[in-house]
View 1 (cartoon, rainbow, N blue to C red):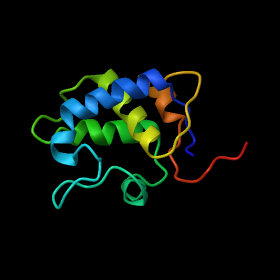
View 2 (tube, rainbow, N blue to C red):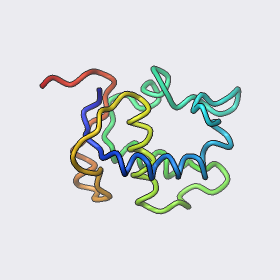
View 3 (cartoon, rainbow, N blue to C red):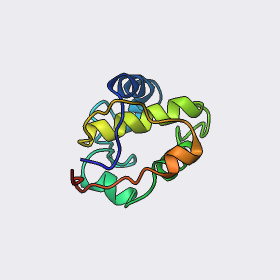
Length: 116
């Protein structure tokens, strides 16, 4: 239900990134704990209100993993965002999110269903 299409294979790779680099703090449920915020539902969107996919990737890359920000590589961060969008209700598309800055800038993330 987001203004972006992403590929199932990419989301699966993003899940692997999440399991390896994020789940230790945000938990397998993505619900976090008293220190790490939840990455699903309204509170997730409240952290990223109507931002571009580039802004989301940049924010996550600049701060995560907490002990080693900007350490996963561009593709891993884009794959991770694809996974986070999937678990937050985004339907799959026919193509992957691109690592290309100009393409990521065109995509607006919103928690509102898109009109067809």
